[in-house]
Length: 100
Image (cartoon, rainbow, N blue to C red; front, top):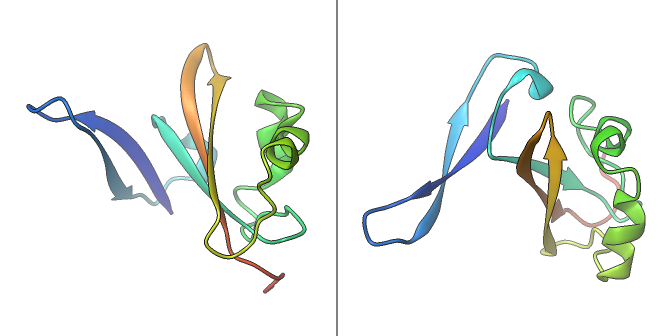
C-alpha cells in the first residue's frame, strides 16, 4: 500500500514523498491519500473505496462532478477534507474505463 506526505523543502517548495507500508490503507496517518478511480467514479482498490471517503466528505462524488472530474485517464483532482480533526488532501487520479 502507498501513502503520501507533503514536505516543505528548504526553498519553500512543497513536494510529495511517497512511502510503502504494510498497514491497512486507512490505518496510515498521512497528509494525503491517493485514490485511483475509473469513469464510474469507483475506486479500483477495495481498500480505498468511496464508502470510507464519504465518511469524511459525504458529497465527494458531487464535488468531483461539479469540478468536471470524470475519472478519465490522465485527469486528477485534489480535495482538502477533515480527517480525525486534521486537514488532509484526497488526490484523485483518473484511470479511464473500468478495469477490474
